[in-house]
Each structure stands twice: as C-alpha cells, then as structure tokens.
Image 1 (tube, one colour):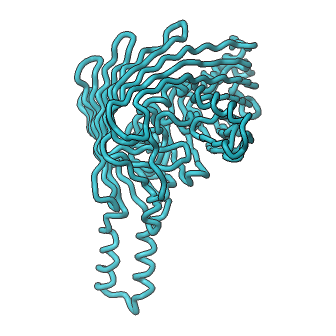
Image 2 (spheres, rainbow, N blue to C red; image 1 turned 90 degrees about the horizontal axis):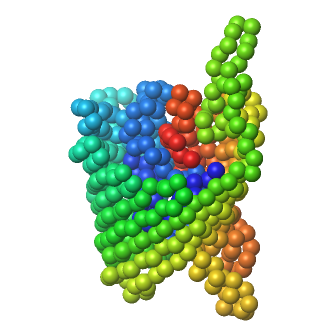
Length: 453
C-alpha cells in the first residue's frame, strides 16, 4: 500500500525527493505543502551506493539521466553519470561521482570542424580545448565515517562547472533502541515545492528526533530547524519564495497514528513456491516479496503537528498547530511470479495535509465566488498509483496526483504525474531498478530502491 508516513514527514524539513539536479540524487520537499507522490520519494540507498551496483548493468558503468538546466540551455538535458572511484577500509569509505553533459561539447566540435578549411594541428588543438570546458562537468565527493556501533557521519561536497559555488552537506545519524536522531546541515540546500520548482536556501540546519513505529501504530517526532539567507529560485523565476523557507528558527513536533486492515488476502502457499516439472522441482519465489500475495486492504493515518518560530519573516505566524490525515485503498491481483499477467495493482490515497485549510475551504463554499481563494499546497488531494506487469520482473507504473480544488472552485485537476519502469531484483527480495520521468519537471533518472513500501 502507499507509504502513509509521508503524511507527517512532509511537515518537516528532511523529506527527500528524487532529483537528477543534484549528484547525490535528492532534494528536500518544502515542509507544510502537499504530500509528495510516492513515486518521487528518494531511495533509501545513498546515490554513490546505487551507482556502485547499477554500473554492473550498464556499458562502461555509465548511467544516463535527463536533467534540464534552465539557466544554461546550451548544455542540454541529456547527462551521463558514473562512479569514478571508491575506496573503503572496514566500514569507512570515500567515493567520487562524475557527471558529464555531452551536448555542448558535440555542438562546439561540430562548429569547429565545419568552420575549418582543412585539417591541421591548429584545428586539433582548438578542438581539444573544448574538452576542457568546465561547464560540461560536475563532481561529488562523498564519505561515510562510522563513529560508533550506532552512529555515523556522512559528508559530501559537490561542484557543478557552470556554477560558482560548492554545495556542502553533513549528516550525523545516531540510532537508539526506539528512536533515530539526525543532525543535518547544508550550504546551500536544494528544495522542491509542490509545483515542481526548485529553490536554493543558502543555509539549512536541522536536528530531529523520530520514534520508531510501535506495534500500535503510534509514532512521534520533534526537532529544531534554522533557515539562513534568502531562498533563490534555481530557474530564476519571478515568484515569491515558500514561506517555510524564509529565514528563521523553528521548533516543531508531530505525532501520528497509523492502522491498516486486510479486507481479504490470499496467503502464499508451498505450491506457490515450489514448481513441479518433468525435470524435477524448483523454487519460484515472487520477484518482490512485498508483492507476492493478492489482496485488498484499507489503511489510514491521522495526526497533528505544532510549530513555533522564534525569529524570521513578518508575514509568517509565530505559532501554528494543525491536523492531517490520509486514507488509502489498495487492490492487487496476481502473485508476481509468472512471466505474463501476474500483477495488476492499484492504490487510491486521499491526503488532507491541513485540516484547518480544509475547514476554511468548506466555509468559503457558502460565500460569494469573489471571496473564494484557493490554497493549492493545502488542498485535499487524491493520489492514484497503478502498476502493471509487462514481462517477468518488469513493471510499468504511473503515479498521479489530483488536486480536489482549483483557483476557480471545487473541481479536480491533475497536478502531477510520474511514469516509471521498474525492474525487480529477485535476489534482493524487495529491490528494484527504477527508471522514472516527470513531464512537469521535464527530468528523469535511474535509481536503485530497496524495501520502499
């Protein structure tokens, strides 16, 4: 079923969204806005670890991606990424990721050759100079340092040739028996809003404590966050920055209660696992253990969050509290074992990111249309996820979000769509290679995801 915990996590500053805009493959979702689509959640596997595995399935270990650069259109959108090198000693490791955009290089060489009357050493030298254009390249140096058995430090620094500054990140993670404590800092931090627009925040620091989900489904988290500097739009759009990214210090706490119930489920049997043939018996596990049983289920999550801003923008309230909730219905046909027609799955999820905004919207229905104002980030939304087996471990998936309100009134509208092809890796039990594309963002990439349910 859909990953309901994002209903609470989207109110905080550490929800990672997949993006090829950064070499580490993640951007932060702007807190307090609509819950991101399930298909946009970043992989739990670090990008450098993904590349070390993905390189085995691609020629020369080079993984393609599609990432537009609005301020440098001459660079093109097609890009190539590779793990240049990795060195490890015990649990400590350091690695280097390389990124290359070939369009500008090809165009420059083509123009150089076309303009030359004849081939000589000078033409060769001028052509070779185009390979030294730093705007074609980007690098990311990343290292993980184990501090104790339950603590680790992740450091990374990234530089794009067409940009002036470096991007540096640090994350300290400490695991307790029933809690996870995380300290994150970035200069600058990349955020993505509900419209798919990117924002760079000069400085971002977060300290967060999150409980593990208990058997009862209860979960809570609290933390401190600081924004430094004025957020800037990556594509230089003339728009107001999200209020949650304006400078200030915020303390936030939230809780949630999650519950799921099967309407019916066909349990896995020994006959499903063992196939009898003339040549004998052999084992046939599901391509993904999370998709091995046909079923129908309902699930839901409800919770609340409160926040206090100690400093910052004048147009932002100092105190706030709200309720949120999500409800999901899941239906799966097939056991995902055969080559054809053994998986059809649909998830329908209703998200209410802000109960206060919903109440105001309902009250506005009884007023004149002139007084009606839509607040899309907090509008109720319907997420639809459809998965269909294509052949063997290959599954086609569509994630879509329908906003249940528009600027002209209550009328559903498609807000976002993600298309993806998923190749399940049976040896990893619940791992898959995902190639996704976002028409709204006009970008796509290939990732390795593990146990993402």
